[in-house]
Length: 293
Ligand code: HH2
Image (cartoon, rainbow, N blue to C red; front, side, top):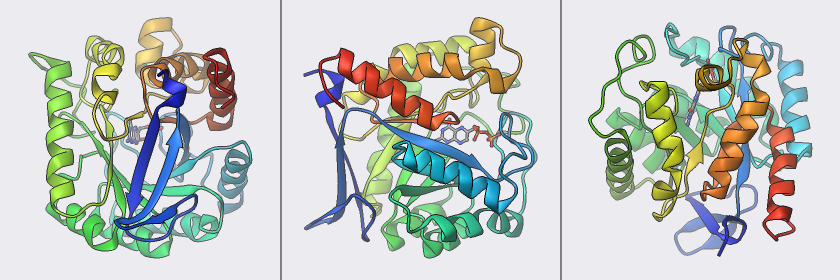
């Protein structure tokens, strides 16, 4: 079976776009690799900071993505780039809630990219379906919010915290440590009642170029497991270090290469700024692999 035929699923405790009712809740299933489009309503994100601050501009981008076949939108109100300063919950909510409310009728899953349980809780009430927490649901309150609402969650691996994580990342076996953290955390949060999870090795979060390359080369070891895998390296510094592209907005070609590689290794979802373009790239890649999707 090649990557285009592999089937993936996420289960939710409430109805979501594309879902069918199953005894455990509402299940979304797909084959091959789908795209999560990045929508940062922030002034300081490393590549698209300030681009989507106006509601109309953000909605236009989001709707273009959905029209292009993007499966899930990831809406964020706080930058987590290396060195970023935290923002308070009220500021984050002011940035993400209008977008979630305006997009909840669209034919796409909505993810909220937040580390704060209070932001996640309000975002879910406003219409978000999945919580993307770069701390791997470190805060027990985040696990409770997801479990009680029936939201799916993305568990990402990060060493340290955004402000300082790139100062001196160290591992003795980066692939072994990251994969066992993700599998362990998935088992714990599902046992606590979160209906389903995505796993993400967290490219660039407390990792050197060598660490990131090792994780990218080993995606296939993570995608062998039962939980769908999300890969998210869009426009990241890794691409600059490989291909000498200092400006983040110029890194889409490298982003397509990294995520096509991840798709071929069985990733269920890839997170990109140039999300509609990635849908096109995946369709071509799938056709070459012998599938029409
Ligand atoms: N990376 C960023 C933000 N959220 N979520 C997951 N699951 N995985 C990631 O690798 C990830 C993420 C950082 O990228 P971006 O959103 O473009 O920038 P910023 O944090 O500066 O807003």
